[in-house]
Image (cartoon, rainbow, N blue to C red; front, side, top):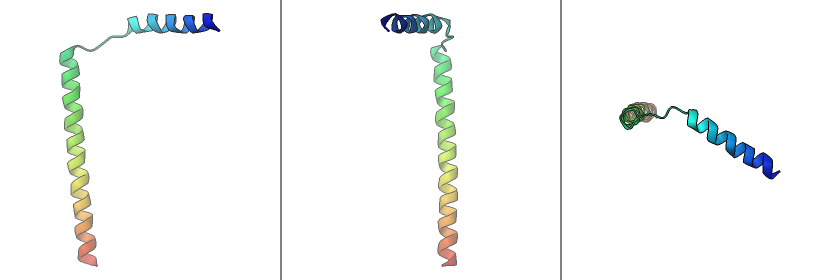
Length: 60
């Protein structure tokens, strides 16, 4: 049991060395893209919600 746990963590360590980590600049750019996309979708959902509320209030 202990040997299999050690083997697992050894394999994890070997695989983590193969990972290509992004640079700080790439990470910053990706974060900005995600934040901007979230803001656009939030605005879109808000606009659709307000439109549906307006339409339902107009009908009723």
